[in-house]
Each structure stands twice: as C-alpha cells, then as structure tokens.
Image (cartoon, rainbow, N blue to C red; front, side, top):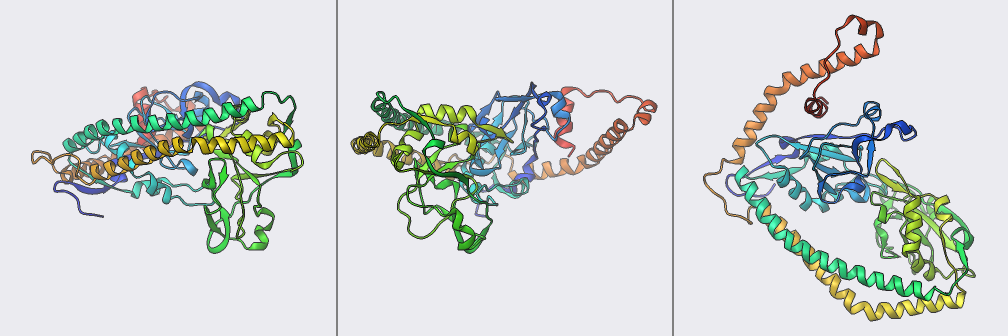
Length: 468
C-alpha cells in the first residue's frame, strides 16, 4: 500500500460495502423467464447507470434460484471472461446472474459513485487478477480483499464532482474519435457491398470449407507448457499470434489444434453480443501455437473462397445480423456453435473477382490509413489522459484537502462498530430464514405454525442482501 494524504486511510472493499452475486433460473423452464423482475447480464453493463435490462424473470424463477434483489444505488461488477471489470450502478431495484457481483456501500462510508470510479480505474488490474483457462474470471473473494484508498466523505464528493466534469470532456473526445473510426469502417463496408452488388451467387460457410469446423481445447496455464492463444488474440479481423499463454499440455496433445496460415478463427462466446462470432485470419506462422476452446477454426477450400475475402465478408452487416440473430445466451454470455456458423450465408463472386475485391480493399485501407491513424492517435491520447486523471484522483492530487473533514479512519471505525453490533441481528435473521424454509418443506408443521407475514418489498431487498 502506498502513501496516502493526511486524513485518508486504506481499507478493503469488504470493509466498505456488503457484497453479493446473483443466479440463473433453469434455462429450460420457460415459466421462469419473461416476468416483471429485471434480470441483468454482463451485456447490459455499459459503465453507467442501469435502468432497464434486456431480460427478465418471473417470481417463480426468482424463488427457484439463487437470484437476489439488488437495491438501487448498488455498484455492479462483471467477474467473467473478457468482460472482467465492466461496471454499472443500479438505477432501479433489479436482479442479476452469477457472472455479476454487486456492492452495496455501507451508509456514511464510501459513496457509490466514488466506489464506481475507483473500480473503473482499476479495470486493467482486475483483468490481470483473473484466474482460469482461456476464459478467466475473478471471484467475490478477490473483490472483497481488493484495497481501496478512502478519503473523508466530503472529499469523496469533491473528487467525484471534479472527476465527472473532466471525464465528460474526455468522453466527448473519445466519442468523436470513435465516430471517425466507425465512419471509416462503414465506408469500407459500403465499398465492399457495392463491389458485390452484381454477385448473384450465395454460399454458406459449410459449403466453403475444406475440412469440418473444429472447436479448440481448454487447457490450464502451466509455465513452459505448449503455447495456446488467448481470446484477446482476435484483433481487427486478424489473429495476433503473440497473444498466447503457456498451457498444461505438450506438442503431441496440441497437434490437432495447431493453427496454420489462412486459418480463420471465430469467437465462440462473449458477454457483448456485438463481439460474439467475430473472426480473425491467421497470417504467417513461425513457432507452433494452438487455439483454445473459446474459438472455432474454419479452413476454407482455396478453390472456392479466398481466405482474405472471407475475412472481409465476415465483418459485414449482413453476416453480423445472421450471427447476432442466432446467438444464444447462457449466464449472460452470448454463444454460437458450429451449426450456427455453418449456416451463415454470404455472396460468392468468382475467385478472380474475390482477389480483385481484396486488392481494392487493400488500396482503400492505404488511402484511409492517415485518417484512421489520426483518429486512433486521438483515441489513445484521450484514454491515456483518462488513466492519468484517475490516478491523480485516487492519490489525493485532484482536489484540495480540508481540515474540517472527518478523517477516513473515524468513518471506517464507525462502520466497523455498526457491523459488529449488527451481527446478533443478522444471526437471528438467518435462524428465522432457516426456520421458514424448514416449515415450508414440512406440510404437517406448516399446519401447526402460524403463517409468517410477507415482508414489504424494501424489507425483502434488505433480507436478500444481508441474509447470506
């Protein structure tokens, strides 16, 4: 832990908030879904307040699962895969699946906005703390032990106000750069579709393959093991062969999954719908590397499809509509399978026309390179300034300290004392909950016991949050 300004104090996230996570009703029971209970998944999280969810569950689904109510003002944190560290603040009472942790700050300690922005600045570190195979995750235990610098409550408010004012300007700069990049991509897609306008022949991915699609293999990390790509190797329609880990297998085990030049690797799943099914073309391969279970390998027949043409056509709106319309969601992760990918249709001009389109696209990219580089530089600069601003904010350098503020050590001590005093109440609540469950499970006992009054909605929320 580093040095902090006077009147600040270090704490853990468990010291300043009540933590929990959600659950998922059985996916094969339709009666559990489509109700009036908002149910958040990672794809709903956009680093801002969350007021509505794309999915909902019924009361039956709620009661038959580990789903919990999350009150308004809780901070939501994604724990799974490439989405680790994505955030939201609940703008309404809602529920979530188990891929999302939620933190309800203790009253009078750390504000939800201060916690939100601190975690926003910690995203890269949280991703680095992920454990597991090709789809790493963090746990609530990791989050609870995470350290946080706590300033006095008044200074927290001043930090948030100053931070949001300056971040709003950076957000405008990032949005402008992102729009420029989107326009460049849209122009490229339009030019491609114009070139294909005269093509009447349509094929499917299945009919373009020289070998069946194959899923990769999941392997644990092991020092000095055989290399296996990470999902992050998928970058802009290409595969970055330097983005790998060392896996717990040898060359013989990895041999069926080795990548070769012109292989096309497709993402099987992602917490964001627009990223599932994205593909990348493998270029020249030096030393051997395999692909993981989070990817599906497609090898096209070169006498039917030019690999570079497939890479171009795969990112078009027409193909994306098919993939996103067919993707299925499980525990908040959108997924595609081999059957879905095999059925994807796209225009198929002659090989000569495909090569001409690829060459024309390369020329267009060269012509647009200066504009793209300028937009990408602006975006990188805005992100770098954002990081610097966040570091300054949470090290005490953004706003002045005021002697009249109550020291953070005092508010942390008060929270600790209040939590200690509440322990007997929580234990009694747990016993009551166990008693109600036992009574509900015993019809005879139920006839002999007076019914338990139904708690109010606000009490239900508190019970779900604090009776663990």
